Length: 184
Image 1 (tube, rainbow, N blue to C red):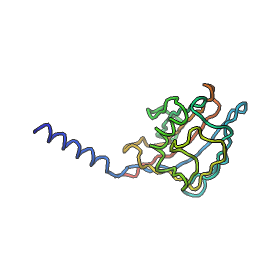
Image 2: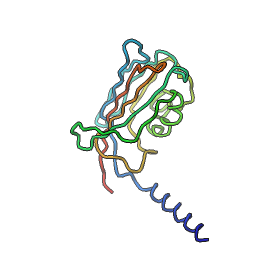
Image 3: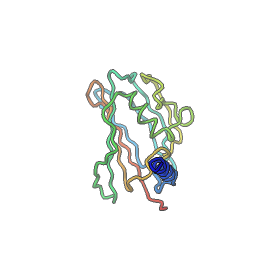
Image 4: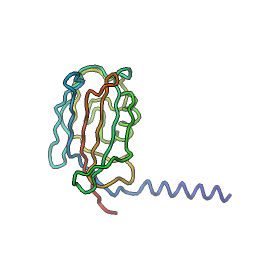
């Protein structure tokens, strides 16, 4: 009976903690995709617009992205003071097949931000594999932190994603997010 009461108390505490408002806000500061000129897999025409820094533009996939030939990985770094002294943090995605990354990571943490047929037609949900050649739009995409951890490091967060074709890096995606405390 005591064990059951403790389990119920623990579940109530966890549920209460998870429902607390986040004590940070996030703004997209920059977004750059650099393709290897020897083997370009995509081209982009992405801009950040307005005071909110909404992501707008297109990405053109030049060949079908399948699990046999294409992998992705990502690392994250934080600079709490803005002085350029980035330290790697444990928010990483190991090198995995492209469709697996979209299903298991992008949809989970980016699903509130990237809404299919609302602000993009890119199949981030992993529903299409291979991801077909074509041009995909992004329209007024703003960072939504629903599904993100309750506590995040404050400062400049740099994300570096790498795309591989047959185990060779063929492109990198660099994003900068500004994470600010909003107090409790």
